[in-house]
Length: 124
Image (cartoon, rainbow, N blue to C red; front, side):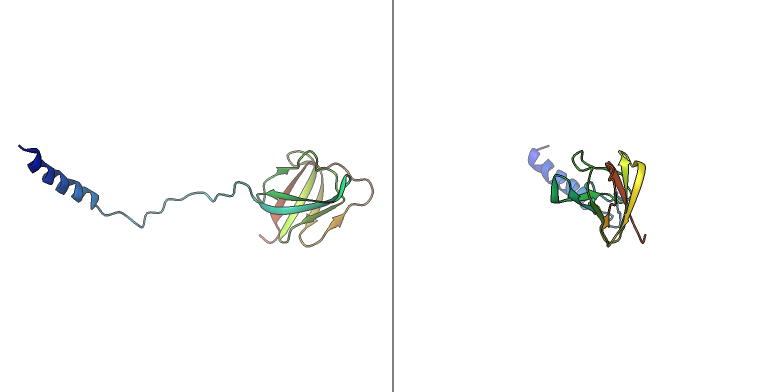
């Protein structure tokens, strides 16, 4: 058999294979992706930088450790719709201080060193 007579047969067979129906109703589930998180907490009033602002970014419900240079501050504010618990130890352990969305909370008296926080939706 000649190559020129085999080529059209191969083209017809491959064309039929490519013409197979694709199931468009097939949905492949995938987990929502939010690797970095969203803005949850705002801290102000640092001893060495009184005008500085730290914005805590995380995933609601997940514990976030504070950077080592952000552990003493005068005011904490959870962003609207969230309630945040700030902890004195890493990995959300130790004594706590709770702030709710919409208002600043200023510390009175001696301020401990804070190490971590966890925020959750207030109305969920």
